[in-house]
Length: 289
Figure 1: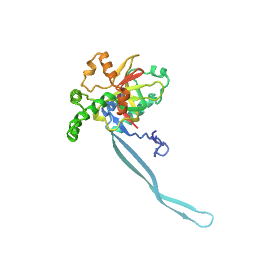
Figure 2: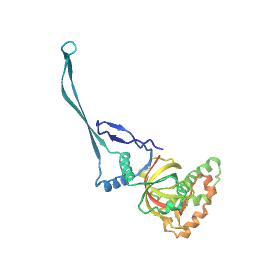
Figure 3: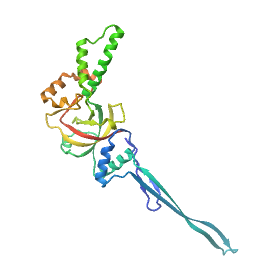
Figure 4: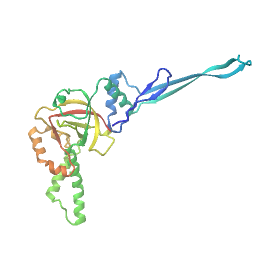
């Protein structure tokens, strides 16, 4: 998936050789979290690094004295050295690479397929994980966005054609729903890990660190586990009503989700709005390909 290269210094010559490097295409990268974790692990934050390289050699001329089989050679010259210095400023990508290298050294767990429930049972709170899977925007967020588009375009389409395909009562309901929405400060997504276990992970992205508008992608996610869902627990991913969903009793949330016809929504390209066990609530650090 990645071209792997890492720089190392050959002790005998002092030359640098590129052996393994990880090149990532970031879809999301929370630099604040990366810097916080690095500061904790390294005892501070490195803003820049200095690389120094030196090279020394001998230059001069040589000649031969005498004739016949006996010759004497001599060389004159002097030592010279060249030293170069490079200041490397840290970027979000380079900071992430430092963090990832630290986590790898601490035996970072990578899940690219889960078909054994015992693997899920070993996951712990506050654990760092890298998972590979399908990342999609949560269905409730997609549905409200679609309803907002319909509410905006329906009157215009009615004027253009002389009548609207959406009756006024339905249009009023759509406007009321969209008026309540817009209070969501995070972009809710669901990552589904391949395998028969059906492991799904609820993530809420900070829009300030989102680097793409095209989701529904296969990608890797570096995350920190908040908690695992309990058996028979259903968790609604995202709350486009500014926190109102979270204030509702679980039964009311379930009724709302049940009223959403999954098959009909799938035809509109809208994914699932909730996850169940086995499921994980997690803090996203980065999403990349």
